[in-house]
Amino acid sequence: MSESGKTRFEDIYDRPDPRAYFRRLAPLEYEIPQRAQAAFRRAAAERDGGTVLDLCCSYGINAALLNHDVTLAELYARYTDPAVSGLTAAELAVRDKEFYASRRRPDAAPVIGLDVADNAVRYARAVGLLDDAFAENLEEGALPSPRLRGAMSDVGLITLTGGGSYLTRRTFDALLGWAGRPVRVSAFVLRTVSYRPIADCLASHGLRTASDPSRTYPQRLFTDAGEQRFAVEAVRALGTDPTGREAAGRFHTVLYESVPEG
Image (cartoon, rainbow, N blue to C red):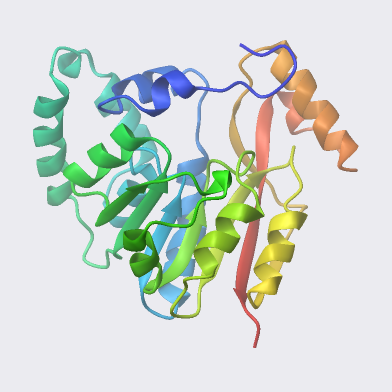
């Protein structure tokens, strides 16, 4: 619960498998990964080749939706099903690897993931959702590992649906400094934070950012009245009207798309 800010869910982000994640977020109707898929598929089709890098990738949910014939509703049903509650993480991983392989789309794009949650990215890679995974925190000022630097040389698209409230220009600057091809960025960011510092960072790397603030995408229900008050006040402080969005009971995001100049 939250009395003065956005609720944090650290206890579900780094488990050996995603069951607790889906059980916690199901009542909150967390939906932004599904909402983002049309934009991500369009951006993936328009990228200048290369790999997709999903920031704050968690258990590989964006990769699951992007590259497989599956919906977020089906994933909620799968991971909250009492039939899987008694499985070990290893047993679930075996089932998941077969499940995702059977639903792989013919137009699947190579996807790598970056997240501070080591267990989550390890699971996503083990079940075949991520081609490679990196548990690194670039917000602490560290350089990307040599392996991540090498992977960045082939990244053509960066996606983001979670973490926009926690990431800063540090992460983007650290990554784009090692880009080896033109990179697009497609990011869904809560209206409670300003994307301007990151957009300025992207501009310094030759990317032009556009958005349509009038079109928003719901993220999830609030956990409590305190979180809603925080969101409404934060949105107003940024000069935006929460009526019909945060004031109606849900976090909302804006899509920011950045493409190379020219």
